[in-house]
Image (cartoon, rainbow, N blue to C red; front, side, top):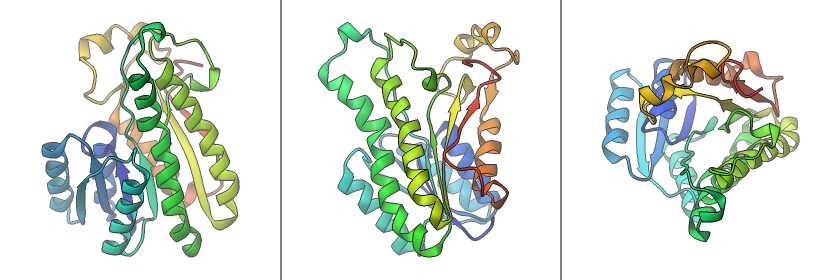
Length: 244
């Protein structure tokens, strides 16, 4: 897997950071983008470079299609290619649907669904030219069940959209040696939620424990490998059987 280039959104923290560092250990050059976590992004790139790999961080609002396209071009101009796009960014907020604002509603789609389309479309030409590519996007466990989620409605619908978009992209990009898959986490200790809050959810998880960022790293690295070349359009639960 060495010698390849990855672009990771949300790569400054949590799951994205863990994946970035794992790929650096495998010899990948890793570009990460962020909106607010400048300090964490710089620290992540420092860790990437300590591992002997190339790292790059950029502040970018990928909800802006022109900014997303510019980011892709910047990485391609710098390193000549993007072999893997990993969409880890996925902000959310909790608010009852009847109290949600128009701005809050749109922000969930602008930050969870639309960037996946913008970035995938931008990286596809280079991947098609090289006849190899990987696109991995994070959704959420149980999104495919289409259940009622009155306190995170817009976020949930956006994550449903990610699964549908993944399948459409997989269908059109598979003939070019490109795989497009979704990972749907349940409860993962990625640093974004208090541990005491996570511990309360353990009793609902059949596996009996909270997942770690390493669990996300393992499945992501597998999907990026040649061993996973025939897995395309999949939605993989990463939840210890929660949400099924």
